[in-house]
Image (cartoon, rainbow, N blue to C red; front, side, top):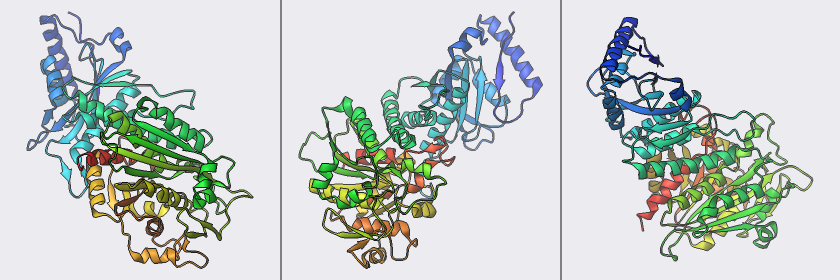
Length: 534
């Protein structure tokens, strides 16, 4: 009789040696009786194929586990071996905790089992998200990463009763920007374990790919993603959907013709020419349907201009085009999903650099709508490029306008990385955004648009508006929003300040350290929700 070569890697808890010995002896005998062996041969290990399964904590039973449908089916093929190993290998698997088992199945040399928390988890009012969806995303991300570290090449993933969230967790968790490194992270392909929820799985894959596109654009160095390179990248990503998409890469001559003086005042310090990227996604069967307008701040590098930023962490300002990245990535995703809705995306793209041609503090410029702006701080440039884009966007008579920007450090002080700050003149629009964010787990939080803040930007010595509030840093995110409101006449407008969620350290467990690509999935879910609103 051949001894069972079973290796168990325990991520938490204690193992009693005698129990393991007895289990091995008992299973070896059973394997011999049934002519089956679960040995992990060198051949199987070299295939590097893995499986990630989820388990819930059983309600009202201390130490009890409830297997997902996929895990229960897998356990059945092993005559209950998985359940038995989970019982003796340590404490109950809590939410997010994991264990890896080797050689227990001939098709999967490595099996990761991850805790999903309680089965009763759902939408949590205090957290403003669906806890069960977040648990699935975190668990599948953790399991896939564990197997990636073991150089597993292909992973099948448990749908956990929510295949879309499982696919999002797997796709987002495995993303790593290493295009410019000689030594790259092990690339892992994933697929749903089983096929019952394949449509939801594919939807989750598409959502994750959208956010990962935004992450890639934000993470790439500024000498690789210039305004021109950004526009070309988006054009390439939209090429497969050419029958539904029209792309305009507007030149500096066009920008000048449109009298976008605020936008041009920012770009003039750089040697890189500005680009006004205009995307039209025509997904609705009704070509006359009013479009959703998305506007994204596209500063591909922000030095601060003459109001130069401190050098520490200035490199992170390669991601100051996060608004444009998330807006364009959401339109690419909407096209991939074939959403039956019309969307227009606008991205004013340029660098903010100091030079002899750069705008100086105290200069006065004229926006597209004729309003004059005193530029007291050239590092408050995002609101200037957005002002002209918003004015232009009104010409399309949109059903709603949402602009997205890494606009102020003040929103990071206020909310940190927990949520995107939303300033809006529309309760209806806020409700749609908030509802979408609960589903995606990428949360939003409403901020005030009081006249209190408007007065601080309209009380200006030389012009109609000042690009910074009268009381300097006080309420900086709110005065920036109040400034933008001066260029909005539409009844349904929202400004999303994403500076606080621009990057991830370890706050979102299923995102690695780096640029986050948030809130791309929330924008996509929001657009999808509007389909049902007529």
